[in-house]
Image (cartoon, rainbow, N blue to C red; front, side, top):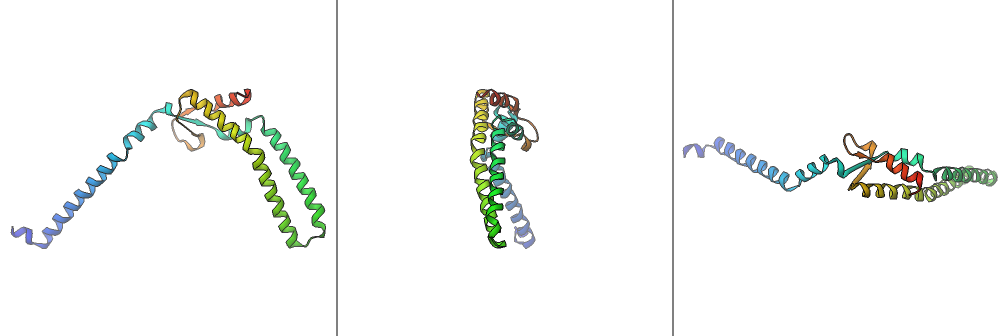
Length: 160
């Protein structure tokens, strides 16, 4: 009993109890957070697919139309700027240039949205057919996953 009254021993026992409590909380958190289910899902290659999104984007047949339309829009904007900026001062030219840049950005988004939607829809169709619950870009994956890039590319080329 005399040893329990010693402040050093009380501190040691308190630290020991606190350490056990913290370790117990940590263990409980790990078991309750579903680490096991995440680990088993990650190890199951068939549930995760990967695609090379940049390659798919470069191979979409509609991309050539988008590029042609954007080139024409850029040429029109350049001609418009050259013509209208003749009478403007530097500040007005800069504002007008920013407006044209914004207009071109909006036009690019307008043209690219259907192309990106088509790619995503095709990826989803192939993933559903393969029974994949998740598909991520191949550039973000270090290891694993089922590569479905070729199948998606073929589906995009055939228009299915």
